[in-house]
Length: 277
Image 1 (cartoon, helix red, strand yellow):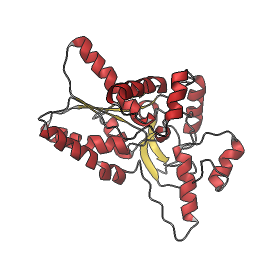
Image 2: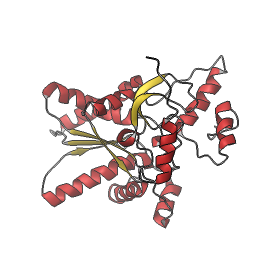
Image 3: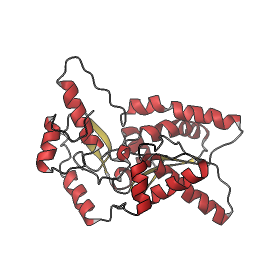
Image 4: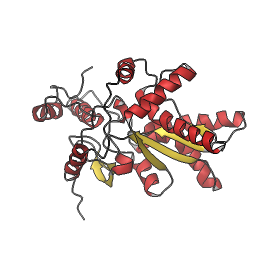
Protein backbone atom coordinates (compact mmCIF):
# COMPACT_ATOMS: atom_id res chain seq x y z
CA UNK A 1 0.00 0.00 0.00
CA UNK A 2 1.32 3.42 -0.95
CA UNK A 3 -0.08 6.87 -0.13
CA UNK A 4 -0.97 9.06 -3.10
CA UNK A 5 0.68 11.08 -4.54
CA UNK A 6 3.61 8.64 -4.76
CA UNK A 7 6.88 8.58 -6.64
CA UNK A 8 5.97 5.22 -8.19
CA UNK A 9 3.95 6.62 -11.12
CA UNK A 10 4.27 9.39 -13.65
CA UNK A 11 1.01 10.89 -12.41
CA UNK A 12 2.27 10.95 -8.84
CA UNK A 13 5.70 12.30 -9.74
CA UNK A 14 4.16 15.06 -11.85
CA UNK A 15 1.99 16.17 -8.94
CA UNK A 16 4.86 16.07 -6.45
CA UNK A 17 7.05 18.06 -8.84
CA UNK A 18 4.46 20.84 -9.01
CA UNK A 19 3.50 20.64 -5.33
CA UNK A 20 5.71 18.57 -2.99
CA UNK A 21 3.16 19.03 -0.20
CA UNK A 22 0.12 18.06 -2.28
CA UNK A 23 -2.56 16.31 -0.18
CA UNK A 24 -3.59 14.35 -3.28
CA UNK A 25 -7.17 13.42 -4.08
CA UNK A 26 -9.33 10.45 -4.96
CA UNK A 27 -8.95 11.42 -8.61
CA UNK A 28 -5.17 11.37 -8.37
CA UNK A 29 -5.14 8.01 -6.59
CA UNK A 30 -7.27 6.64 -9.44
CA UNK A 31 -4.74 7.97 -11.97
CA UNK A 32 -1.91 6.21 -10.17
CA UNK A 33 -3.83 2.94 -9.83
CA UNK A 34 -4.85 2.93 -13.51
CA UNK A 35 -1.29 3.71 -14.59
CA UNK A 36 0.11 0.84 -12.51
CA UNK A 37 -2.52 -1.61 -13.80
CA UNK A 38 -1.95 -0.57 -17.43
CA UNK A 39 1.75 -1.41 -17.15
CA UNK A 40 1.13 -4.88 -15.71
CA UNK A 41 -0.19 -7.45 -18.21
CA UNK A 42 -1.47 -9.59 -15.33
CA UNK A 43 -3.47 -6.79 -13.71
CA UNK A 44 -6.92 -5.36 -14.33
CA UNK A 45 -8.42 -2.27 -12.73
CA UNK A 46 -12.03 -2.00 -11.56
CA UNK A 47 -13.23 1.42 -10.42
CA UNK A 48 -15.20 1.12 -7.22
CA UNK A 49 -17.18 4.35 -7.33
CA UNK A 50 -18.69 7.00 -9.64
CA UNK A 51 -19.40 4.78 -12.65
CA UNK A 52 -23.05 3.99 -13.27
CA UNK A 53 -22.71 0.19 -13.01
CA UNK A 54 -21.17 0.56 -9.54
CA UNK A 55 -24.18 2.55 -8.34
CA UNK A 56 -26.53 -0.08 -9.73
CA UNK A 57 -24.65 -2.88 -7.93
CA UNK A 58 -24.86 -0.88 -4.70
CA UNK A 59 -28.66 -0.64 -4.89
CA UNK A 60 -28.75 -3.74 -2.69
CA UNK A 61 -28.52 -1.14 0.12
CA UNK A 62 -31.72 0.61 -0.88
CA UNK A 63 -33.53 -2.62 -1.73
CA UNK A 64 -32.84 -3.94 1.77
CA UNK A 65 -33.92 -0.63 3.30
CA UNK A 66 -37.26 -0.86 1.47
CA UNK A 67 -37.83 -4.35 2.89
CA UNK A 68 -36.83 -3.29 6.39
CA UNK A 69 -39.25 -0.34 6.33
CA UNK A 70 -42.04 -2.58 5.04
CA UNK A 71 -41.50 -4.93 7.97
CA UNK A 72 -42.14 -2.13 10.47
CA UNK A 73 -44.90 -0.50 8.43
CA UNK A 74 -43.09 2.79 7.84
CA UNK A 75 -42.64 5.03 4.82
CA UNK A 76 -39.90 7.59 4.44
CA UNK A 77 -40.33 11.37 4.16
CA UNK A 78 -36.68 12.29 3.65
CA UNK A 79 -33.58 10.37 2.59
CA UNK A 80 -30.17 11.94 3.10
CA UNK A 81 -26.89 10.45 1.95
CA UNK A 82 -23.27 11.55 1.88
CA UNK A 83 -22.07 12.12 -1.64
CA UNK A 84 -18.55 12.12 -3.04
CA UNK A 85 -18.50 10.10 -6.25
CA UNK A 86 -22.04 8.92 -5.66
CA UNK A 87 -21.96 5.16 -5.14
CA UNK A 88 -23.20 5.07 -1.55
CA UNK A 89 -25.84 7.74 -2.18
CA UNK A 90 -27.08 6.11 -5.39
CA UNK A 91 -27.10 2.68 -3.80
CA UNK A 92 -29.35 3.90 -1.01
CA UNK A 93 -31.68 6.17 -2.95
CA UNK A 94 -32.21 4.64 -6.41
CA UNK A 95 -34.71 1.95 -5.30
CA UNK A 96 -36.74 4.63 -3.51
CA UNK A 97 -36.56 6.86 -6.57
CA UNK A 98 -37.83 3.99 -8.71
CA UNK A 99 -40.86 3.62 -6.45
CA UNK A 100 -41.38 7.38 -6.38
CA UNK A 101 -41.35 7.66 -10.18
CA UNK A 102 -43.76 4.72 -10.48
CA UNK A 103 -46.27 6.01 -7.92
CA UNK A 104 -45.88 9.75 -8.30
CA UNK A 105 -45.24 10.22 -4.59
CA UNK A 106 -42.29 9.53 -2.35
CA UNK A 107 -39.58 10.98 -0.17
CA UNK A 108 -37.46 14.04 -0.68
CA UNK A 109 -33.99 12.80 -1.65
CA UNK A 110 -31.06 14.97 -0.56
CA UNK A 111 -27.37 14.56 -1.36
CA UNK A 112 -24.90 16.05 1.12
CA UNK A 113 -21.36 16.87 -0.01
CA UNK A 114 -18.34 18.65 1.51
CA UNK A 115 -18.33 22.43 1.31
CA UNK A 116 -14.70 22.26 0.23
CA UNK A 117 -15.49 19.94 -2.70
CA UNK A 118 -18.99 20.95 -3.85
CA UNK A 119 -19.23 19.28 -7.26
CA UNK A 120 -23.05 19.08 -7.29
CA UNK A 121 -23.94 22.42 -5.73
CA UNK A 122 -21.21 24.50 -7.36
CA UNK A 123 -19.69 22.40 -10.15
CA UNK A 124 -20.13 22.61 -13.90
CA UNK A 125 -22.17 20.02 -15.81
CA UNK A 126 -19.81 18.96 -18.58
CA UNK A 127 -17.79 16.12 -20.05
CA UNK A 128 -14.67 15.52 -17.98
CA UNK A 129 -12.17 12.82 -17.09
CA UNK A 130 -12.73 10.71 -14.02
CA UNK A 131 -9.13 11.10 -12.90
CA UNK A 132 -6.45 13.78 -12.67
CA UNK A 133 -4.19 12.46 -15.42
CA UNK A 134 -7.00 11.94 -17.93
CA UNK A 135 -6.51 8.17 -18.26
CA UNK A 136 -10.18 7.26 -17.80
CA UNK A 137 -12.99 7.69 -20.33
CA UNK A 138 -14.79 11.04 -20.27
CA UNK A 139 -18.03 11.25 -18.32
CA UNK A 140 -20.91 13.75 -18.50
CA UNK A 141 -21.05 14.85 -14.89
CA UNK A 142 -20.98 17.69 -12.43
CA UNK A 143 -17.31 18.50 -12.04
CA UNK A 144 -14.90 20.96 -10.46
CA UNK A 145 -12.28 20.07 -13.08
CA UNK A 146 -10.44 16.75 -13.21
CA UNK A 147 -7.18 18.19 -11.85
CA UNK A 148 -8.83 20.13 -9.00
CA UNK A 149 -7.23 19.10 -5.69
CA UNK A 150 -9.65 19.56 -2.77
CA UNK A 151 -8.54 20.83 0.60
CA UNK A 152 -7.37 18.02 2.89
CA UNK A 153 -10.59 17.49 4.83
CA UNK A 154 -10.81 14.27 6.84
CA UNK A 155 -13.62 12.77 4.73
CA UNK A 156 -11.14 11.37 2.21
CA UNK A 157 -13.77 9.34 0.38
CA UNK A 158 -15.64 12.54 -0.54
CA UNK A 159 -12.59 14.38 -1.91
CA UNK A 160 -13.48 13.74 -5.54
CA UNK A 161 -13.74 16.38 -8.25
CA UNK A 162 -16.79 14.95 -10.02
CA UNK A 163 -20.10 13.22 -9.49
CA UNK A 164 -21.57 10.06 -10.96
CA UNK A 165 -23.21 10.66 -14.38
CA UNK A 166 -26.48 9.14 -13.16
CA UNK A 167 -26.65 11.34 -10.07
CA UNK A 168 -25.59 14.40 -12.06
CA UNK A 169 -28.44 13.74 -14.50
CA UNK A 170 -30.97 13.28 -11.69
CA UNK A 171 -29.84 16.56 -10.16
CA UNK A 172 -30.17 18.34 -13.50
CA UNK A 173 -33.70 16.95 -13.83
CA UNK A 174 -34.65 18.21 -10.34
CA UNK A 175 -35.31 14.72 -8.99
CA UNK A 176 -32.87 15.09 -6.10
CA UNK A 177 -31.65 17.98 -3.91
CA UNK A 178 -28.11 18.75 -2.82
CA UNK A 179 -26.45 20.74 -0.09
CA UNK A 180 -22.89 21.22 1.17
CA UNK A 181 -21.68 20.92 4.77
CA UNK A 182 -18.48 22.07 6.49
CA UNK A 183 -16.47 19.46 8.33
CA UNK A 184 -16.93 21.12 11.73
CA UNK A 185 -20.71 20.76 11.43
CA UNK A 186 -20.24 17.18 10.30
CA UNK A 187 -17.95 16.19 13.16
CA UNK A 188 -20.37 17.80 15.61
CA UNK A 189 -23.07 15.49 14.25
CA UNK A 190 -20.65 12.56 14.45
CA UNK A 191 -19.95 13.21 18.13
CA UNK A 192 -23.67 13.56 18.85
CA UNK A 193 -24.36 10.28 17.05
CA UNK A 194 -21.58 8.50 18.94
CA UNK A 195 -22.88 9.74 22.28
CA UNK A 196 -26.50 8.80 21.57
CA UNK A 197 -26.11 5.61 19.52
CA UNK A 198 -22.78 4.26 20.74
CA UNK A 199 -21.33 4.09 17.20
CA UNK A 200 -18.46 6.31 16.02
CA UNK A 201 -19.22 7.16 12.38
CA UNK A 202 -16.60 7.73 9.71
CA UNK A 203 -16.20 11.36 8.55
CA UNK A 204 -17.99 10.59 5.26
CA UNK A 205 -21.42 9.62 6.68
CA UNK A 206 -21.29 12.45 9.21
CA UNK A 207 -22.26 14.68 6.29
CA UNK A 208 -25.57 12.86 6.00
CA UNK A 209 -25.93 12.74 9.77
CA UNK A 210 -25.47 16.53 9.98
CA UNK A 211 -28.28 17.04 7.47
CA UNK A 212 -30.50 14.50 9.26
CA UNK A 213 -29.95 16.19 12.63
CA UNK A 214 -30.66 19.59 11.08
CA UNK A 215 -33.95 18.32 9.66
CA UNK A 216 -34.92 16.63 12.93
CA UNK A 217 -34.33 19.84 14.89
CA UNK A 218 -36.47 21.73 12.38
CA UNK A 219 -39.25 19.17 12.93
CA UNK A 220 -39.02 19.67 16.69
CA UNK A 221 -39.38 23.42 16.21
CA UNK A 222 -42.38 23.13 13.86
CA UNK A 223 -44.02 20.11 15.50
CA UNK A 224 -43.96 18.22 12.20
CA UNK A 225 -43.32 14.48 12.25
CA UNK A 226 -40.99 12.97 9.64
CA UNK A 227 -39.32 9.64 9.03
CA UNK A 228 -35.72 10.37 8.01
CA UNK A 229 -33.53 7.67 6.49
CA UNK A 230 -29.77 7.67 6.06
CA UNK A 231 -27.07 5.05 5.62
CA UNK A 232 -24.14 4.80 8.01
CA UNK A 233 -21.68 3.74 5.33
CA UNK A 234 -18.58 3.42 7.51
CA UNK A 235 -17.28 3.36 11.07
CA UNK A 236 -14.74 5.85 12.38
CA UNK A 237 -12.40 3.52 14.27
CA UNK A 238 -9.52 4.55 12.01
CA UNK A 239 -10.54 8.22 12.16
CA UNK A 240 -10.11 8.85 15.87
CA UNK A 241 -7.21 11.31 15.25
CA UNK A 242 -9.65 13.38 13.18
CA UNK A 243 -12.15 13.40 16.05
CA UNK A 244 -9.30 14.35 18.37
CA UNK A 245 -8.47 17.30 16.12
CA UNK A 246 -12.14 18.36 16.14
CA UNK A 247 -12.43 18.14 19.92
CA UNK A 248 -9.20 20.15 20.31
CA UNK A 249 -10.58 22.84 17.99
CA UNK A 250 -7.88 22.30 15.38
CA UNK A 251 -10.11 21.60 12.36
CA UNK A 252 -10.23 24.24 9.63
CA UNK A 253 -13.33 24.72 7.50
CA UNK A 254 -12.95 25.50 3.81
CA UNK A 255 -15.97 26.69 1.86
CA UNK A 256 -16.78 27.77 -1.66
CA UNK A 257 -16.75 31.40 -0.56
CA UNK A 258 -13.00 31.20 0.07
CA UNK A 259 -11.27 33.23 -2.65
CA UNK A 260 -8.49 30.66 -2.88
CA UNK A 261 -10.98 27.88 -3.55
CA UNK A 262 -12.86 29.92 -6.15
CA UNK A 263 -9.66 30.64 -8.00
CA UNK A 264 -8.53 27.01 -7.87
CA UNK A 265 -11.80 25.76 -9.33
CA UNK A 266 -11.93 28.49 -11.99
CA UNK A 267 -8.43 27.51 -13.09
CA UNK A 268 -9.24 23.79 -13.12
CA UNK A 269 -12.36 24.35 -15.23
CA UNK A 270 -10.29 26.05 -17.93
CA UNK A 271 -8.66 22.66 -18.52
CA UNK A 272 -11.84 20.69 -19.19
CA UNK A 273 -11.38 18.42 -22.24
CA UNK A 274 -12.53 19.80 -25.57
CA UNK A 275 -15.39 17.86 -27.16
CA UNK A 276 -15.51 17.99 -31.01
CA UNK A 277 -18.81 19.15 -32.47
